[in-house]
Length: 416
Image (tube, rainbow, N blue to C red; front, side):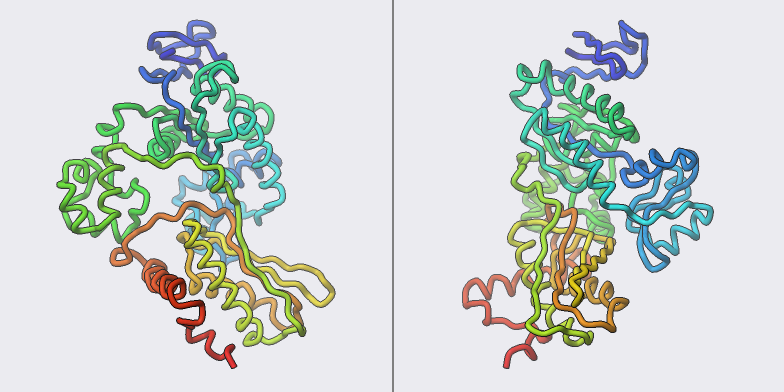
């Protein structure tokens, strides 16, 4: 099979421009179409698409899902993106760029429900599904041809149609030989896209900016460019020993990625949407100082676990339980994924500030929509990566000499 129609599922063993059955031009063609088995599925502008589906009058309007003026954009629909609005952008900047946008507060209960419908359908094809968040996942369809009635490409086209028919939402899919290329492919033809990358990967990647590579943020991207590596092709042509000398293990990974290589397996055991730590007080607490004293060790505990598990998240969740047992949860989406106690504490303290003034019996801090953390050398990145280097060093000291070997200044007052 080298061609498949996305409208009627007609297939051909040759490359064609139109479907031989329904004459549609929505045909996928590739020489390796029936041999590739790793996919990345990404829901198109997920939160905004759910809201537009439920409110048809918003269909042609710019829609932003996010909080108040001090919050950030969770999702922007494709109309809003034409104005330059993007995820994690501060709301005041988003509204300045697109003042006529319709702003909707997130309804995560609804989004979780739709996510479960979509990935429930995916798991009917294979148990090898690793979600990154509510709206995207890697899928390994190796060995499922007989069970599911066709190659992975055929199954995925059928799945894409089913999701759209049953939920009214669209997804984009990338099919490739590994996770990295599958994710790149899923971004090539959004929304409602289906793209394939095979052995042509190295040539396809060569002219693209190094910023498309995992772990290459704005600062590290500038460093690579100043070192003479502006494109992925520059990295592919580089001397491996030089990359290792300059950037350590990360240089070795960059070299592999530049050649389209990625040995990571799809791991369902990493399919985790969140993690948290919480504590119940012996006596009700009211003041900021008291609550922050309980929050800090929870942040240390959660951050340490996140680092051990190799995960991070942009979404920090604060949980408070009042004396009448009512639970209050607040969340914030940060500009970059974090896994340090300092970042968790800063976010948690900001979320807690508006809730002060009454007694509480429990506090918790959590990470939602966790993803695999990418190890980026601290020299090239942000405050988060500098803090990460320090906290990772503390992890090693505590592992060797015990938890009390190193105590953060904030925690010292708790030890009497």
